Length: 390
Image 1 (tube, rainbow, N blue to C red):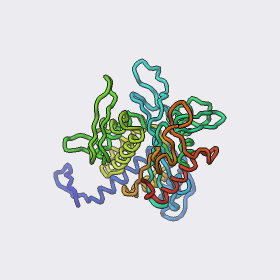
Image 2: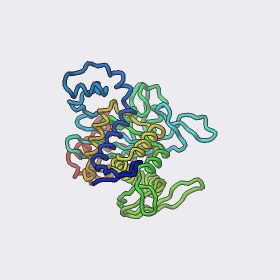
Image 3: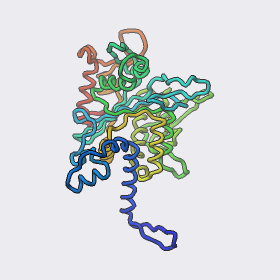
Image 4: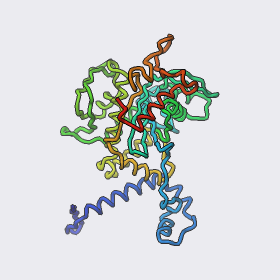
């Protein structure tokens, strides 16, 4: 395939599609390199060079700080790499020093203290290439037993309590630890998303439908009738079963509504939205569009709180893993009372005491200090055999 470009002198020149593709590849990776790692590479530019041509080239470009001959490993634990995805129900917020700050009129510009309504782990198994998406409902009952913080209650308050505590860990780091205590899987990376960021990212990476609207496609497994909060009260929403096109606002409704369904149903829909967004981010429409890459980088810095890769080589390998993702090998579970069978691993509510509602592990007495041991065992079994998912 060839493209034709018209220079100023009026004559035409054919451009090879492969050359055009190579240009975009180099341009995008160079942009990432300049944004993420140029300062570090500059400081290491005077390292000793080797005699072979490849080493000379690395030194000339300032890349000899990295060992490209031995492929570096991305962060993982027991062949598993996990990303913790956290959604905070906030609008009119900006990111400053790793926190969400209020921009509402009349506010004191204070740090947001809203609870985390979405908690999800995306786990990549390096052995099989499978991805397991684990949703943890916000009312999962957990225990934090640290000298700097004692807390027993719903997991959605852990982030806020961690921020307000005297613990050395940040709120998100404490939440990472607590999620690991539930699933048994360590999260090496994290991303926190506000409502503003959710809609903005879909506007950037979404595809255009026949009406000229930007959005994403999801395969909705069942009809959803519900209501959604608006400034004047509530509005009715309906999402029919089947393939749906959702503009940014409709996608937000689909991911948040729960008044007449449940937190568990909502968690499943959120997984579908995340999967659709990831699919669009990794599409050629996005990766081969420098303008979209730039918009995403700008949005990430201003609207998201996320863990940054340590160096350029880690970025390359993360992209390599992303490139190999097979949508048919993505599996979903929600840690609800039906996980593994009705209340086999999690009770919908404590049956023997009064107080606030939150879920508890059924076998909490079997493993003192690690009450989710049976849940962790079941997740490990699913990683080996995804057919166990019901």
